[in-house]
Image 1 (cartoon, rainbow, N blue to C red):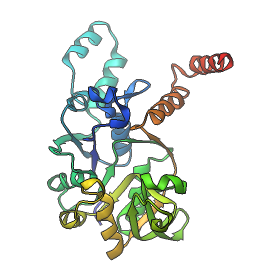
Image 2: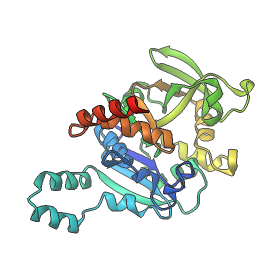
Image 3: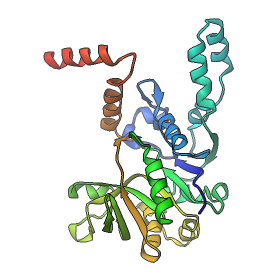
Length: 291
């Protein structure tokens, strides 16, 4: 069994839920305190044993690529001001992994974005970290899924329990429990609109580990909801033929594609930040008492 060393991060979406700011600033570069959400994804991948990362971008997303590149201007300024710690931190970001970029020329869906990575992946298993989802966990969520893959030698999808009324925004899994937090999945449906369409309240949220046979399935998959190539539709075929493992991962998910998720991530991470946590906590208590 090949070890998972490659990851794909689809980040080509327009970010319409974050308008108007996403019209000029990629939502993946919006900060959680002082670091863009994309850095959180890259660091999670690296902490999971990933060495090569392909970020799928779209038009007007150059800021993501620039962030992971060296900045001569800042290097000169920081060196002149003797701010070695800040310089080291900035340069460490550029060395986290082998990071590559590929533009998805048309917005044809998550499945199409993953298909764009076929030549990068080759015949290896790989992780997909959804660009909107930042995970905070003691053990990186991607690492949790990689370990499940190594145990079962099957594609793995990270799932959470979702209220039935919210399943229409995600997907629903037909899954049978095989051990703690682990399910054998034999079918799934993308964005079920009625209770009759729903298999369970387990839904894929943010992370999957796929085998390279997904590419041939994607090529044979017809456009689904919204006229887009849905990754869920391809994974459904994988589940129906050889089975897919669903793993109920441990960790906190922030939906950075939504205003509420963006604010939650900033508040909760600021309360952990070594420079800010005490003063920010005092501020929150003060402002809450006044409102």
